[in-house]
Image 1: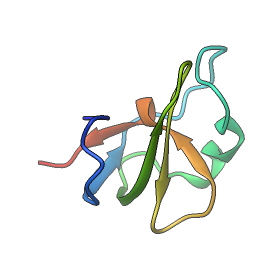
Image 2 (image 1 turned 90 degrees about the vertical axis):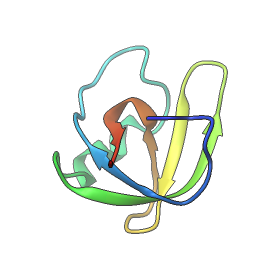
Image 3 (image 1 turned 180 degrees about the horizontal axis):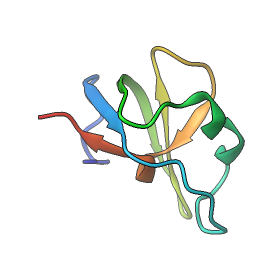
Length: 70
């Protein structure tokens, strides 16, 4: 997904893998459904990971788990 576009928009969960480089917020991955569309609410580009917040769920999620909806 385009992490430099912070405008609210639909994004799709494509994976919820766990890895040492995924940053904080990986515990929230159990709330996500692969293939489901969510609405981007906010984004924070960090040094180690880019975290996003969704309108539909509480908590933060790693941006690598999402793709743009075209």
